[in-house]
Image (cartoon, rainbow over all chains, first blue to last red; front, side):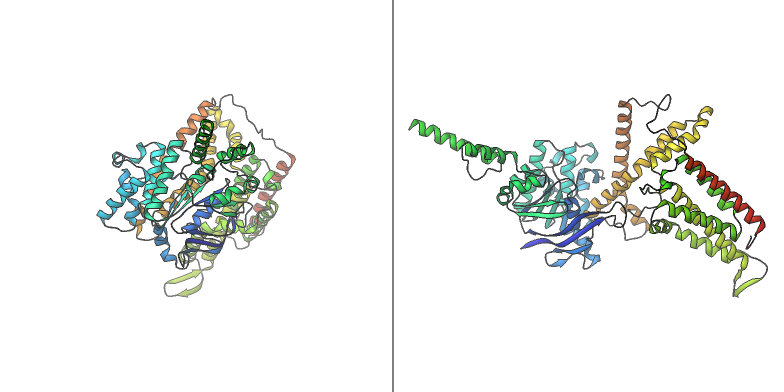
Length: 290
Length: 272
């Protein structure tokens, strides 16, 4: 069952001028309900354009966007409610902060939905927890925060609308490894606990391998692959041909295999490989003892 | 936001594109003078023909020029109505209740419309569409260089202009981005009364100002790091050079001015 689905959508920028650029070209792609799907592609591959069509910020030149069973462009008046149901966190979302306090900024979305005060307060607290915004930050000005903290506040601002589909465009771009890990695992928590459908755009294979249930690969505006991480990363040659690749750890595991050291199934995350190597070493030590 | 055509460079390699920006600036001044000197049908025809020729030479599709006219449509309609209704003459052409329309009113309306259209067209053909902002400010700086002797900060002025022009697209893009981000959070910019709409823009204006100040600060630091200290003794990468075509272009302009004056005097058809 797809929570949201693109049917043969196309989008062209600046049609009819020398700057004309077809950013998305006939993409059909469904996002399965309750799963975390990653959209992977190179810079300029059309990922961001694609996600801006999911909540009706851009209208496809042709093709249809289905949210559940409905075409989101069928009734223009309902577009605003579509935006509450499909929460979009844009690239570098820290620039969208404007309120006097972090709390008020997170409450902007739910406030626009016309919810009662108590409900808003509850949602702000919940979203802050998911996004890793500490209690002590809520009454500060968003402009006093560090880059990573601002990013989290912006993510919380969208989570607070409790969208059934949460879309994040490069949520971890420009953060340090600890920041990446904390924001991405918060997003995964949100997906698991609320049962929402989550879509992450990224060009980091490593992040995709760790966090995503499904991966879609986009290149030059077209959908090239869709599947589980095992299915996707098995196609190493195709990925390299598209200017992408597989996680570094997967490459290392393959090299090891060539040397006659066969690791377990999970060769896509550092953790998985670490575990297999530990097991392997333990086995060998035992074998030597025995 | 993207139909902000008025004031947008349209890359190309036509003869008009390749003219020296100084020649184009001088020609624009000449063109403005022309539209105000002209006061007879023949003179306007002459200028229109010249504008059409330049448009053809520029190689920019007619549709782009037409799109640039859209923002001034309201002004044209407004002044036409006022002119037609308010100008009085000797013999009314048409009367209905309190409405009296005179021949003078119509001539007035057509003249003003033509002037506005020609001004917008002229600046579009000669500058905004065919001259990149950088070469435009370069041209301006060289043209105004003599004023530096009067201790006017010509270089600083043109640097400010370059930076301002450089950042217009960035700011437009940024506004777009912020508006989208707030729309994604359910902000509503297009309904409600004037006050409600103005209030709805706060979530856009505040982040826009914050980032503009930040960017200005960063730019200043970056310029200082590269030892920028104003215009004194500063060389330039592109040295402007007049060529034969620039001379020919300006001579054609002067000829046009002479022609317009002559037509005004000798063929004063539909003269004001």
